[in-house]
Length: 114
Length: 111
Image 1 (cartoon, rainbow over the protein chains, first blue to last red):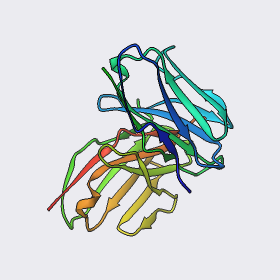
Image 2 (image 1 turned 135 degrees about the horizontal axis):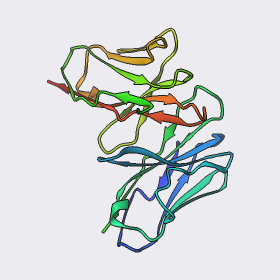
Image 3 (image 1 turned 60 degrees about the horizontal axis):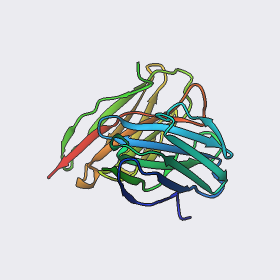
């Protein structure tokens, strides 16, 4: 199993530009999560999906952030327009639908907005 | 009050020593418990699940105390490679599909 795959690994962009982060969950996992991690705020849940349906997006900071999951094998997190305070590591994670299973995280996308 | 609370540390541990630390959770109905480790600039990785009866995986022992609502992790014979941040993870009240992460306990093993 290839695990959770995220791309790109690193992204440097200028303020105001659109940024799209991508995630391929583990096949057969029903849940997909997007997290953001910074030194100041730690690991924050942005949004999660169950069977491709967004369940809780209360962690999305503002309207500049949007996430989609068009099918079971792909999700995107988009920031438009990007701002320097969006600089962080963005992790995608997935888990099976059964109880008592933990998440598997992708390697993350390190985003720097200058 | 945070749902999951951890001592941030750091716990400085000589190589070969034993270190233990706890995590408290606020929701008495929580059912799933895990320890994750996160190395600097890497993703969190599942270290072990925590079962009601306690469980052991090599040098690592996890315990659950439901009455006092805490879980613990003990590391025996610490290795330099055990240096990491250990995240306590609990399922949440509003959705068992979503896990709540503690802020982590940093462990530094020194030669």
